[in-house]
Length: 324
Image 1 (spheres, helix red, strand yellow):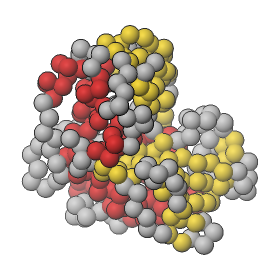
Image 2 (image 1 turned 60 degrees about the vertical axis):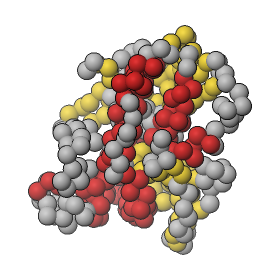
Image 3 (image 1 turned 180 degrees about the horizontal axis):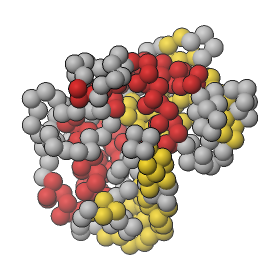
Image 4 (image 1 turned 30 degrees about the vertical axis):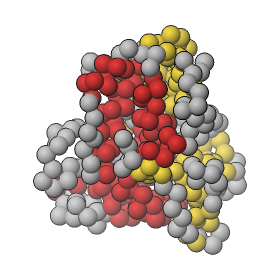
């Protein structure tokens, strides 16, 4: 079903500079915001123009990564306003705010589809961002290492070493179908009646134009189908051939039997919109009962690509636990 969807996961390790780093408790916005500015600074040759006005739009790495547009001549999802970016930043879940000089900070990066080929740009940009500085006071860091995460074996080979600044190309990409095969325990061997979903970072799940506070199973699947269909189309060039209405109807038969969730507010400042934005969402965990096994392939993908809005900031991170 999702064999064409491809992703790769990496671990990025920063080393705080001589003044240390002063960061907010949730670091997703700081990492994403600084990264976007550094990317534009390094690769953009016509900063005085908007991406849609630039003659280089269709070949520019910055335009593709941050201003993804429908392919030339494409009609499907052409008016889709929230095209997902082809990457996910997963900040550390720790809430500490000060990192002493020389202390390490690690976060993870997921690249989707065509963006996997842009990995060298990501490495260069994170190195450049260290010189620009991040967080309060724009304090500097050194890019210590980038490790490729092999989801098949759990190994984390080094692909960038900050000491000698050498890059080794190692392919650790997996497909959506492979993620299902890597599941432990195998659902083909044991079929637990219930599924627990842990909402590790704020999940912004929209239903009927409103963000919901109760994570009903069909709402999760609706949001996930929207995200996967747009990831498939915009970053893999494939339109998903699924019975969306039928899947949503079946998802409605899976019941929410236990809920330990809460709404957690989170604000970030958008320099682009010159305004503070509330990006709160659901955190905690919920237990579902029914025929959820049919949705297992897309739920396994959700663990990697996240669910709902704000995935580039690390929002929407979930963990699946078959059984209660």
